[in-house]
Amino acid sequence: MKVQRDTPPGPKGRLGLQALAYRRDPLAFLTRLSRNYGDISHFRIGSQDFYLLNRPDYINDVLVTNYRKFGKGLKLQRAKYLIGEGLLTSEGEHHRRQRNLMQPVFHRQRLAANAQVIVDCAEKFATGWRDGETHDILTEMRCLAFAIIARTLFGSLVHEGDWDVSEELRSAVEGVTPHADQSKWLSNFLHKLPGAKPINFEEALARLDAVTYRLIKEGRQRITDEGDVLSALLQARDASGGMSDKQLRDELTTLIEAGHITAANTITWSWYLLASHPEVEAKLHQELDAVLENRVPSFQDVERLRYTHMVLLEVMRVYPPAWLLSRRVLDDFSIGGYKLPAGSLILMSPYVTQRDSRYFPEPDRFDPERWRPEVRQDRPPLSYFPFGVGSRRCIGEGMAILEGVLLLATFGRRWRLRLATKRLPKPLPLFTLKPSRLRMRLERRD
View 1 (cartoon, rainbow, N blue to C red):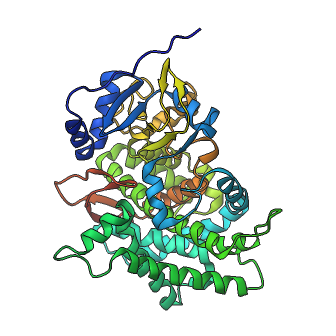
View 2: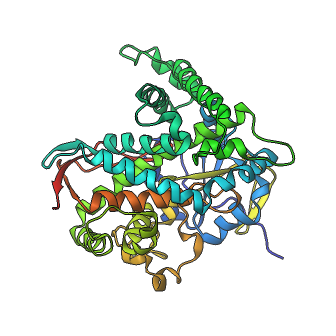
View 3: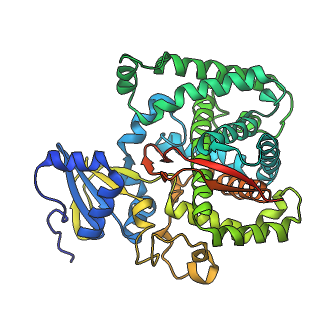
């Protein structure tokens, strides 16, 4: 019989100092915690107990084997004020029903249609670039990612020629997005400070809801499935029927926010890492030239762009979009010989685990060769989990990989991006792992 031990090891001393260290730099704090105290460690902030897990089988125990014994963490609970009961925040039977209804949206045949949208948007976007220009690349990629998500979600309802609707939706999303990393109370408090932006959270969310509900109404009036996500969601049925307008709103808002922000962050990190590693960039360009032969990529090319895929996987190892997963312990739970009390929070960080030298030698080195089949098969599966795992694995994983590969290919076949500043980007651990301001200079390859 396994003996239950006391609280796992962790930093001692004044609780306020731990809270300050975590809030000042959570990435460094969690990395240091794991390196100093092992695969399960403990710290407290106020009266709240936190347990960090950094071992693949422990992570599997929580996210897969015993997932019903845990609730979502505080950050996602707070996100409900923005995205409601979408897949990212909902729990229990409601989450299971919604996931089953939404699963067909991400089938391969629909991804093929989305591939054309991704390439079309990227090609149109790139025509506005000029050799030698310097851009804030995160802003550029956010504009592109939003155009892609708007067209894949709503199709002809926000057709590129209908600028009133597309611009209205984009403006509403831009008004809400800064609030995604703040609590509702903090958003409204900051709005009252001198020099605050003129639109507070309630006003921004009301604008987003207005345009989203209008698009849902117009979507219900369409006769046929036009291949976009809204069409598929409107047709989704189970024994209880279809989705209500509120359910559609929550899922669409979740997809808009999570979809365009994570895509923009990942592709921005990609340009930074490629510019910093010319040998990887040269190998990427070599594959693009050989596979594409000076034409735009297609859905059929994605499986042939193996090195491009490896580059993307390595980018998400170094800078995972979801840098932290948390779960609330519903009843006392035993793991690693320790008993974790109900009400405590379990933390699992892809950022920390994916930089562990036991699984990734020289973890700070950017090396796509780690993703060759013969290399990756020797690692435990949950040493890498940028999309989560189990019943709550990101439903849009296939779309995210497709978009990342196609954007690298579409831009990479014609452009090099060069760092235009000595100030390197820092990872900002907000709701996602956002890069700080990054200016890059465009160089045409042809």
